[in-house]
Amino acid sequence: MTVEDRFLNLLPGGLRACVERGVPLRDLTTLQVGGPAALVCPAHNPEQARRFHEAALRSGLPWFVLGGGSNVLADDRGFSGVVMRVAGQACEMRGDVVTAAAGLGFDELIARTLRAGLTGLEFASGIPGTLGGALAGNAGCYGHEIREFVRQATVLTGDGDLVQVGCDDFGFRYRGTALRDAGSVVLEVVLQLSHGDVESACEERQAHLADRLAKHPVHEPSAGSWFRNLEPAEPGGRRQAAGALLEQVGAKAMREGDAAVFPRHANIIVNLGRAGSGDVRRLAARMRDAVRDRFGVTLEEEVRYLDPAADVVA
Image (cartoon, rainbow, N blue to C red; front, side, top):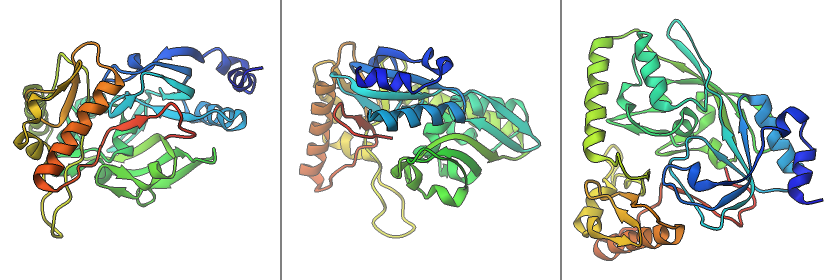
């Protein structure tokens, strides 16, 4: 019996039927790069996620969690373990409190809440990926971050337990959380929004969407911003945009195979058609090295790498 068969045998029949074998990761990630995943499991609710995780632990297979597939570079060799797709789409609004599944598209949530007369999230309009991904990476822009609106969440811990956590338990920081570092996966979240000026919020949303359309790829696959912005030199200062440094070193002219820097944003790598993971990693290394050589600063990647040999990745 293969280890994959052992995993499947640990699942009840209903969940076993949902599992797919050999799914190309290029079809599951926004950069559209990556070889086949051994097993792909869609989890539509917390209990399904718990059962998939339990089977992965007991079978010994490595484990990776995907939402919308942004901010991820998958390897051309694929992944020999279990990819769990956080697939829940539920969303309930009571007053100004929103309870939503982590698999719901983040921008779709913003549109839904505005239609319901709730404001607060419009700053993030156009950010790709799922709500869960936005929480794991503490998505933010225009002076705001998702953490401002979190009340509590249901998470799957690295040990396989479903627990309720409060906002303080996330350990929010710039583009990350302590929960993700610990291997926990957000499955459902409760957000506190406001009954504010919806007309003004919708105008802000349209302005942000137009700005993203002008500066971000629309026709080419990408993973989003590749490098994190730099922390301020002094407390209370502003972060330095990685894209500004990359532009100064001529990154927009860089290309490796079909992996190229987007002409309108020096911190975004796009797939021009047939880019491989090696092309992307060589290009990212060139970008990082150019900034280090010119400014003495080492940029930190925001995009996660799905290593085929990883034991457990979250």
